[in-house]
Image 1 (cartoon, rainbow, N blue to C red):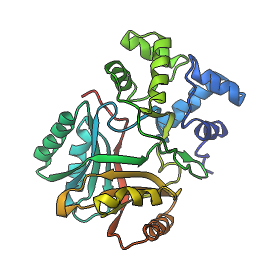
Image 2 (cartoon, rainbow, N blue to C red):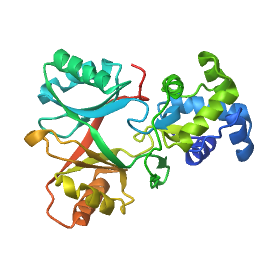
Image 3 (cartoon, rainbow, N blue to C red):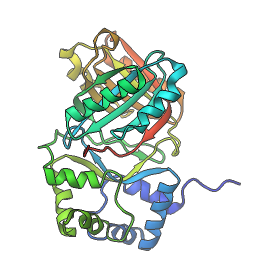
Image 4 (cartoon, rainbow, N blue to C red):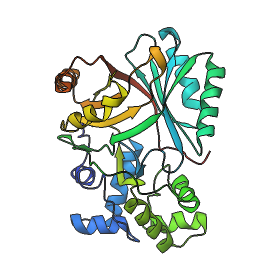
Length: 323
């Protein structure tokens, strides 16, 4: 008989703290007090989920382009070279997400991040040279929905927020860079982080509070990997809609709880004219296909679109904005 995927404590941790990790000196003790367990048990349960790949990190989700620069990119390559090229892409330090999607000409999709737009551009140039492939730079123009989280019995409806009030300061960027791989699993994680930057524990807590209040940090908590939790199907639905009509169509899509992420991106000429991107996650392909069809119907007009399922994840880490 197989052991359960998650212990009762781990289920409670994921349901309760994918966002809203307490910004106090001993956050794990605060969680333990709320759950009626001990701090060591919370730390051990958290470490086990990370070791098993269920949780990628206990850390921050940062709003795109507020503490550096980023872009979504697609690689034009033959399917016979996907494994080879995916390995090259994943080895690039500036790449934090790298997936294979169902597209005959653009099978590899990745996110590149860096301290500046020039740094991101340099990453794409290096990868073009290393792979010999054309790479489309599909820059973010506007976000409508971000902050993805998952409940164990179905996806959360992500929180919608107003735009960030400002960009991160240099001190804040240094802190975010240290936290890119997550908080250390120790009783006083903020003190440990502060020690690496010559900041006090109270300084770190104050800065993080300011980052959340400014909308730069969208959430602090467990960042899960959706596939191990049973959300094995996800697809990106892209729409070729006139620039003047994108925002209005996005507003219609925001009424659908099935849409987990929603963005407007810069098109890439005739080869890739799509501006509006909607992500749908589900437990099986059929469910995602039905939700995508409902989204197309919600558009209300014959908007050209494509449905691209993700088939493999090659890399998924926190974004690095310090390079």
